[in-house]
Image (tube, rainbow, N blue to C red; front, side, top):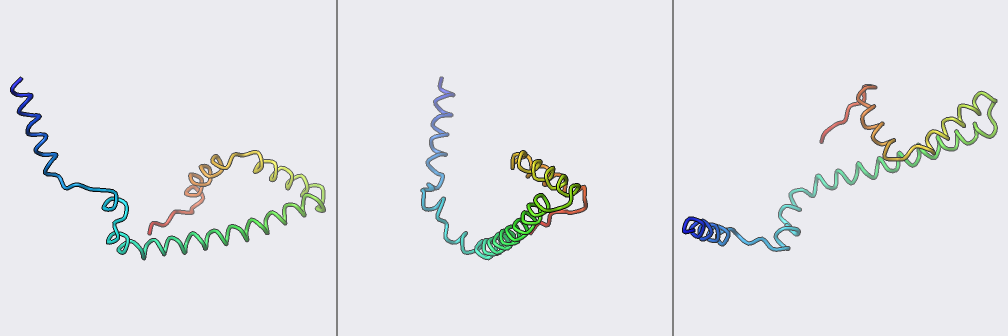
Length: 113
């Protein structure tokens, strides 16, 4: 019993000696933010660039597929119909996982910054 009391006393002393971290120190560390701001801005630029490219590519490929499905020759109409049905019926998470794990097999490797 004395051993337990001694351990609890020692543990309570150790917890009192730790520096107290409050909400401001933990989540609003301005020094850390100033150091990471260039990387965050670079990531924001990459995200915006990828978003714009994806929108443009999606717009043109969707327009092409819709025109092929409506006005293309019969074989291309069937190809467009199958392509559209596959991507409309596949959940987005499954598509993302397939793309993420399939790209290295094709030779496209992710860059790390």
